[in-house]
Length: 148
Image 1 (cartoon, rainbow, N blue to C red):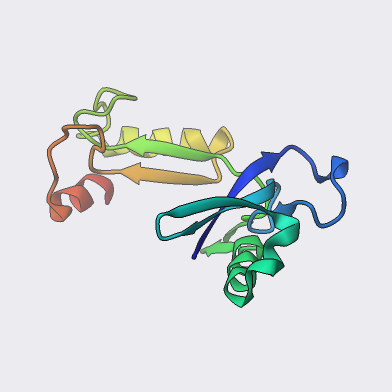
Image 2: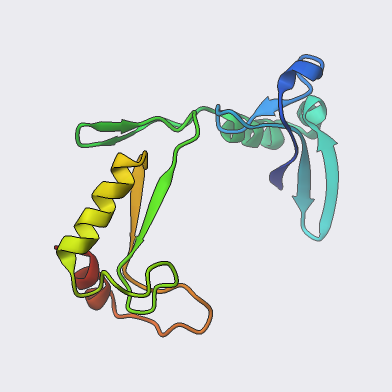
């Protein structure tokens, strides 16, 4: 059995108690699950999930449980609220910056600082292109691109 939250709602205020659930203890609410069992799919309202038995109850508890914050050195990222992530590509074929940071670690670092100043809670460094048709990069080359 696989449960996939569906029927997302803007606010729980317009729904009866128990009719919607929080996704991962955060600020997104949903009203139903797509229940997938083999080739069968069906929609089950959140309020009826207990009728599917212990496995469904266990999955529901895991899906709705709050996520622990990420402790990154002195920084703490709370996952119960929206966060902005900056994407810093260090690839020669980057669609976002045309590869301008590949051979300029200082410019890449400055771009990352600019993202943090602008409010990015997390910066994702990309050392391998994920565009369709991009050549695969050996992990050593990928690491060399992103580690100063």
